[in-house]
Amino acid sequence: MSAVFRKGATALITGGASGIGLATAQSCYAHGMNVVLLDKNQEALSAAAAQMPSSSGNAISTYDIDVSARDVWKTVQQDVLAKYPAGIDFLMLNAGASFKPAQGKTPWQDPEYFEKTLTTNTLGYTNGLAAFIDSVTSAKDKPRAIVLTGSKQGITNPPGNPAYNASKSAVKTIAEQLSWDLYNNNPNITVHLLVPGWTYTGLMAGYFTSKPDGAWTSEQVVEFMNKKIANGKFYIICPDNEVTEETDRKRIVWATGDLVHDRPPLSRWRADWKEKAAKGIEAIEIGN
Image (cartoon, rainbow, N blue to C red; front, side):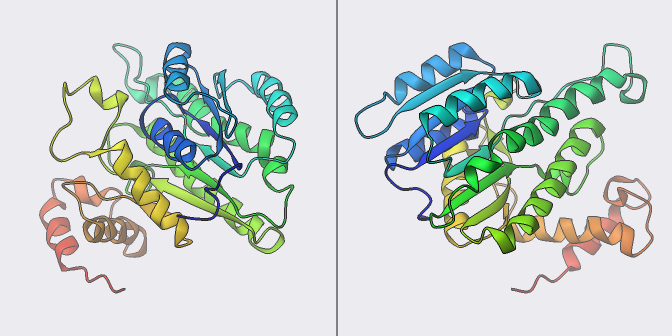
């Protein structure tokens, strides 16, 4: 485990009442950390807090918050900083949602679909950074980390949900820029882009009554993430029970190749390119 996860340190996690956020919170709690959970589901927050009761060793705080609401962040910021003046040691911006266009409309006919998606999945992250970046960078001598949860859809950009893909592509860019900015002045802080594979979370439970064989659990994602953080890796591209790390890398190379080789965008999914793409991806060699 990374030294970030240590007794007495403080973790703040958005989307922390379920799925990957909750599994991360439970891991932090198990290592004796104070845990601050932010989520817009009060019932789930209460259930999460009941699983991790405060003790003399570590405290649990919960906040019912819509991460897209900047004014609410100010209130949370003031309260959290008063409770933990030494600062946040592990900041995980993980809250996200997938919206659909209004009934009868395509994505291109519904600007509200884009607005809701981007305010939650992208501005929800920048709101969290604005509220707590000073707290995270307040110490120069303690190992600290920031994790932003992205998506493979924000990298390989499959067709079907353009607003979600765009929101997660923006998260990737934000994480990369943040890593660069902290690199020189805050060497004690590592930044990581967590990119889960197929993961059985509450969102997936709406489509599957039980975990599909191909999916990972949230706990598997967190275990993989913790190992990568300990190894100082920025890009944490998670496999699952169907897609290997090598396959992910090949698909990423192919997607980038559309730009490099002047192919039509999203060539992997186009009928006239699908067979060539499949063969091309298979032929790609990935070095260490």
